[in-house]
Length: 330
Image 1 (tube, rainbow, N blue to C red):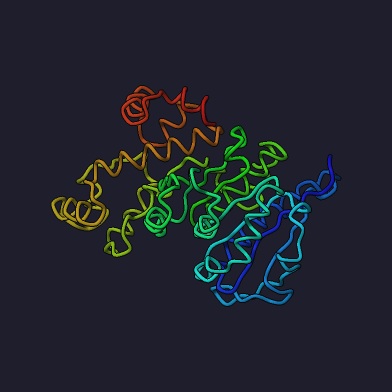
Image 2: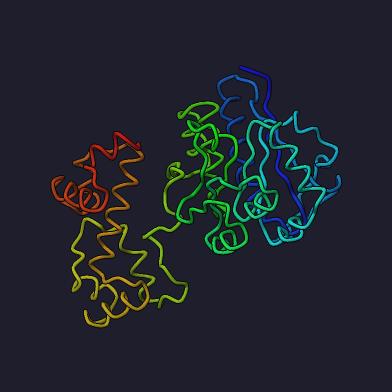
């Protein structure tokens, strides 16, 4: 194995703590997994800031800076990550930092952003004519302020190890999407088994592919969902193999079928039947991506009953069969 690769993350006042610590923990856990097999650490972790002093994140936790970014030779770095947070706006106006990032881009192997860190990368001009994503709440701003960027709102990250452009310069969506991005980087460096081992160590269900939507149909679409409906939405995924007719759901929610339909359409924008179909499809997709269950078992667990019923749903919504989906994406 080659010499240790340095993963550097920029930190600044009011940075989002998880944007920094989430990805860094993935790389640290990869080192732990390697140690279990008697192998040396593969990654060195480095925090870069304006000064070698503690930096207060947006949640109040302080991070200790290892080195000043303006004293750091980018050629010594393998990967440079730019996180987001409330402090991004001030960084976007920091001309010396923008100049340093522009100079670092051709020197590092990989340069990427987490969450609203895409706004900082965009301010350098490096993302012009590139595809980028960011936290859903900042998508409109990124599009408005940087029209030369091809913004794709509904994806977790833009990293693709098989594409020269996005393997070098990439972005990711909000907060936990940075963990998915880091797992993708680990997979590119050390292989899929290592990425899966790290995901297991972090108690993650699976490594989500970068093209997956930021939103999940398993979560309420709005924060003001009535408590009786919120409880039902938490109950549904664990009971997909049971009777989920409108009448059965209404009994579970202790409302009338008519009231249930009104709540679903008002709060989620879809009726109960359509919602159940979405949850079954997403759950089936996740199980197929995980690769631990057969088509027949997935159909049974998700309430399709027979694999043919699941096949028709996949063809309708994804234009592929479950077998093709598993072969292509798992």
